[in-house]
Length: 481
Image (tube, rainbow, N blue to C red; front, side, top):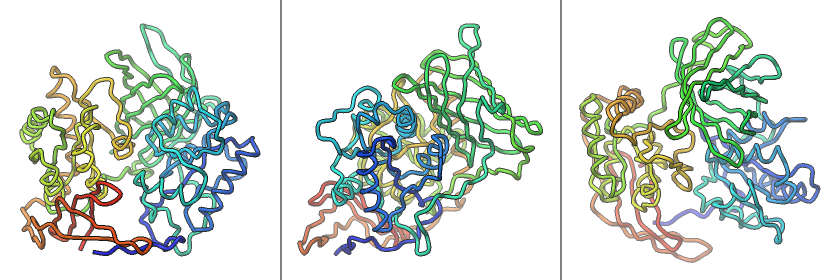
């Protein structure tokens, strides 16, 4: 098995709509040295026809978050003392960190060590020099798919068209008022901007605690819906918001509860829309389901979660959701994902994130385009690293307390139902071309041959699934035939 070596200028590809991501450059725009370093590297990407974010003239931070950070495949950060003092930079990177958008730190000052909010955000990130080839290798190591960043044949690097928002406004413009309650008192939230578009929520503002960014998702059906948001204070804690959305003419009301650990209280937001809401104005589509031969929910778990995985599987089946809890072997998990999974439920926790088995399995699931509905099984835990990247933006269910296990299980079943209802009801035959056979493979790079060792490889129903290792390290393989 040989691999094709890409030329330095990547081949033109035509990615699908959801694959059209770009590279965002975060740097201090008031420092000439920072600008020169960022623009030089940006031009390297542009010359090789990579899609980079192009801002509009006089674009403010709100649009940078809504269009630049929100649609970024990766953010290249140029740390400097100027960036560390930039309020705009802190808001942009706080939002990126909150939404788990991959970051790569580009070292342009050897003697600069980021501190405070910038140091905290960049501490777990990879770093490299501003050399283009080194940046590309770092992006590959982060799992960034280069082909998805290549411009289509007739596509140009230019400012993106602005899509219509369900709502876009702020407190000072008079079209938004928001407050939260705590210990019998009401506290206002001042939004510099809040945006609702295509099922996503993003915004930034200030309240009595400090500056914050807001990210989340909503789903509408028949003129009402559910919303989930996370408010992340810059350099401080985060707050989870869950609520309902309702409409009356041009008024939109979002109300529900906020919570930090065991503490919770009410919140309310009133929005004035640019025109009356109608069900046709914005339809949040059902999750796109890749073609799979099965129609089951697969539970992904680490060894210490086996009993919980079995309990959740049995509970879903009792609620009419076909589910499977695979054996605790990476090969079996990947094969079941390829053959039977309509959707995969990872049981997120510190132990899950630390497990190499779960990393291999969920990486395959993500590569194969199988939908993921996470369950958070540990209090005071926030996913990061590889798990944070894969599950970024996904609506998750909390199952951490045995007292409300049944209620949370019903919530999970409701979230899984749209996937299952779209699956094929009857059992489909399994057409196995290759299974239980370990192939020998190699690839050629720079004229040198490198062996690939497979621990598992299968060709089943037009899908390719495999796992192994080579000179670079462990890998999973996904594809079609």
